[in-house]
Length: 287
Image 1: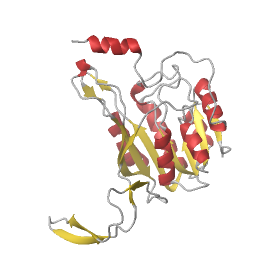
Image 2: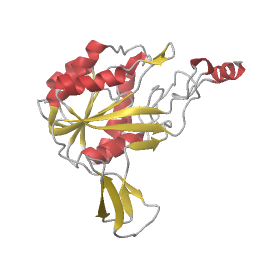
Image 3: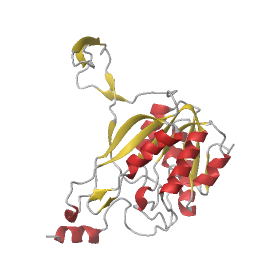
Image 4: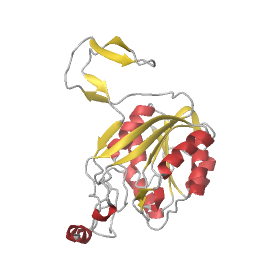
C-alpha cells in the first residue's frame, strides 16, 4: 500500500497498482478529457487509457466507496463528443459501479460562446457520482432556507399509476439539503501556478464532505495542482495524489504542505481558464 498523505509523480495507471484492493473510501478527480488542454504536453487522453484507469478505480475502491468523476465534452463540427456518457456507461456496464447521481457543476463565470459555433455558451460540466454498491457515507451539504422554521409542510408525491398522495414533511429546521446542481466560481486558486484547469476548492471541499468522514482515504489519480489533497488535509481526511507532470507535481506538493505557497517564474502572464486579451479582441471583431 502506498504511504498516505503523499503526492506521487508518475503515470496513475502504474502507480495505482501499488494501492491495495478495496482500500479507498472516496475518489474525487477530473481527467484531461478530450485532450482539450496540453498540460505541458505531458498528457494524452484516449479510450484505452480511460478504461485502464476506470478498472483500477473499481479495484481500489472499498465496498460502499464512491468515485466522483468530473468531466465534459469537446465540441467538433458543431457537435459534442458524447465521450462523457460513454465513460459513465463503461463505469457501470463494464466495471460494475452504480451511477448514484448525475450532478452538474454550473460555472458562475465562464467564457462566451464563439460566434461561429452556432450554440449557446457552455456553462457546466458533469459530475458523475459512482458507488461500489450501496454508499457507506452521505453527509448532505446544507443550504439556508428561504423560509425558516416552518413546520409540517404538505407535499404531493406522484405514484407510478399517476395518482398523488399527500405527505407531511418535517421542515422544522433552518437548513435544507443542497440539490445536485452546484453553482461554483472556477476562480484562480492561490498557489496553483500556471496550471490550466485548476479544480475549484469549493467543489472538492463539498464532495469530500458529502461522501467521506474524518480519517477516510481520498484519492485523486490526476491531482494536477493539488486541490483535492489540500482540501482533504484541511478536512482531516487522508489522501493519495498522483500526477504525471513533474512541474504540476511539485506545485501540488508545495501547495498542500503550505497553503500560502506561491510558485516562482510563471511561464506566462495569462491567467489559466481565461482568454488572452488578443483572443478576446479577435472574438469581438467577428461579424
